[in-house]
Length: 423
Image (cartoon, rainbow, N blue to C red):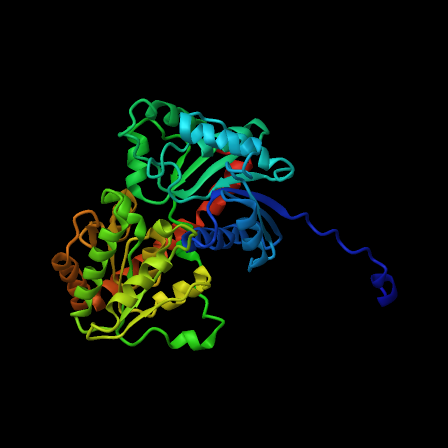
């Protein structure tokens, strides 16, 4: 065939993009929520190719989500608001008041999905622990599931922990019946797998791992931050969220958290405070909480105490946390940022999540401490053990992490199988 003839051949049509809907996530000021999205994009691209269109329904007010979208790093991801709370005096506002004050269960937020779901081949429930009682009954997520399934869209709980629901025995049968109806439940640790099987939820359950394990670390754009982590640093993430497990006294918990940090400093290593969740309310905001501890201790500690600034992406936070010698964290995804980069980590657990992830990685819970009863002595003992065994723990993590990453990535083919008619 001549050059002229070949030049007239029609261009092959471009395959249409794969459209995926993400639901259930909180704003990216929670670095864990961003890490789930970034890891999910790695999984989806490996399975479906780079031509993706992802709509992410974020459980937050429109103004919050608009600000997030303005800073979005991945042009394939478009976030929109799915919110139970509207402007004061609006119908959504009145219904939210009825929910809060009267115990009603209005789900007007599902209307925010209108015009957003067309063409989506699947909806992924991406919140890591939405289907638990940690934040009350997960009825708002169940309502979203029901609305999507009514439109014929497959719904999959994506790389999450589920349960336990034992503390609410009247609700447990309802949630188990709901879970059985979903197209897939991809759980992130064996503990959840066993729990669901024990309660009759099995046919649609698969074990994977948390998507955040495959989020790529990213060197901070601000080059001055790349030297923020001093040699030999102990990274610490302590959250104001723990106050709710201490009769709600934030000041009491701040004092106790400061004692923990001061005790860690006695080990003679620089301290790096690592906030992982930003929020408007002080009771939820790691940044203001840890800054107050830094100010309180800076002049009295025998070692430097630094803090990660607000405004970092989840990938940048992970890059910096990876440079610590050891890490201690309360926020699940702060510990995953450390563990996934082979940093020996003490999990300060306030729920079953940390226990399950540690069982998965180590086969035991020896590197978990309950935050509810934690005092300086066992905290320092736990950190001392990590320092003494740093090399062997790093070696162990480096050996098991490839298998964890394979389980994370297996979620893609499992999803593709569901979409092709397999279950």
